[in-house]
Each structure stands twice: as structure tokens, then as C-alpha cells.
Image (cartoon, rainbow over all chains, first blue to last red; front, side, top):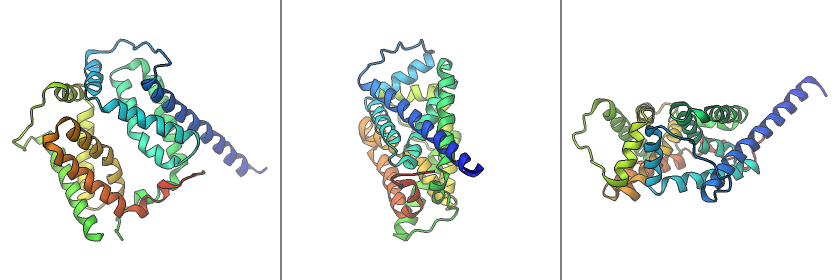
Length: 141
Length: 129
């Protein structure tokens, strides 16, 4: 095997690990919302963070929608179906997990930073599928 | 389709630019007062400090991008989660303002269809690196 092949193989393995890891995280935390199997203790939150989560919970539709999306997208990532699309769908969620933990609940910040980095790495790895997305002056058919 | 895309792009860009700028400049006289769960949701979101500034900057930038047709297919994707949430918020919590959600989600979906060739790569079933 020459040098290029080794580099490509390393990248493929790294992407495989990152994809399954991100998929598992979303799947597990998604399912846990509907079926609380992890019995996680909610760490004490600041009044701001409590009002924020409380407001989102109170709306009724927000968390079921978010968590349903996380379960479906987590599964799709693990089985590698529509990965490029799923990464785009999940990106706003990742950004908000990152901001929430960095700004409001620092205890989870390392995990949130990890998720963001893994997500960005995958976006970079699949960049060829996003070429059309960055068309400067589009024309419609 | 060209005309539909043009109208959708201008409507979506204009709405996001106006409602984005209004957050910073306050020029729209009508401000709805939300109570109950809706009030709790809005004040919870406003209380965190980063959600609204981030969302409104995105709205202004993407609104301009859509109006001037520069990197508009990307902007249409960036604002899609906002359009979807405005739609859900208004249909479920504030049905009196239902048309706001439809006015954003409708043009946004039409742009997605009109520009589908730019999104084709993203919809690859089994992507490999």
C-alpha cells in the first residue's frame, strides 16, 4: 500500500468512528427522552437555564419534535443512509447544544465541544456533497 | 418555476430582513403580548441572552443574501429551521398568527424545490468519502 492509500484508509476509519459515535449519541439521548432508561440525574441549573428549558418543555411540541428528529437522524447516521443530509439537519441542534452548555450549563461543556468538533469534522469529510449548496448565483429551472 | 422562485426568494428575504432588523431597531409598532405557556416560552428564550441575537443576526444576513441572490441556496437552508419553528410556534401556540408560519415555510419549501439541483449532492443516499 502506498502513502496515499494509507491516508485515505485512515480518513475512512476516522469518519466511520465519528459517524457512528455521533449517531449513537443522538440516538441514545433521543430515546432517553421517550423512555428514561439512563435515569440521569438532572444537574442543578441556573434560573436562566431553568426558565429556558421550562419554557421549551411547556410549549408541548418542542421536545417531542426535537427528540423524534434526534432518534431518526441518529439511526440514519449509524446505518449510513443520507448521511450528508442528516448532518445538515442535525447541525442547528449541535450548535444549540454547544451554546447551551457553554453559556448556561458548563458542567456539560466538554461533551458539547466534543459533539461540535465531531460534527464539524464529518461536515468537512463529506464536503463534496455540499458543493452545490454553496452556489454563489443560483438560477432556477 | 423561475417566477415562483423569484417571488419566494423576495418574500422570504424581505420578511427575514424586516423582522431581523426590527429586533435591533424596533420600528414595527405592533408587538404581540404572549401569556401562559407561550409567554413562558418566549421569556425563557429571551432570558438566555444568546438565542435572539444569534437568530436575528442570521435573519438579517440571510434576508440580505436572499434578496440579492448571493449564496441564496445556502441561506434558504440556514433559515429553514427558523421557518419551521415559526410555523410550529404559530400553528400550535398562537393560531391567530398562523399566516406568519405559512408565509415563511411556504416560500422556503418552494425555494427548496426550485433549487433542488443545488441540493442533489446533499440527498445522496449512501455517501462515501
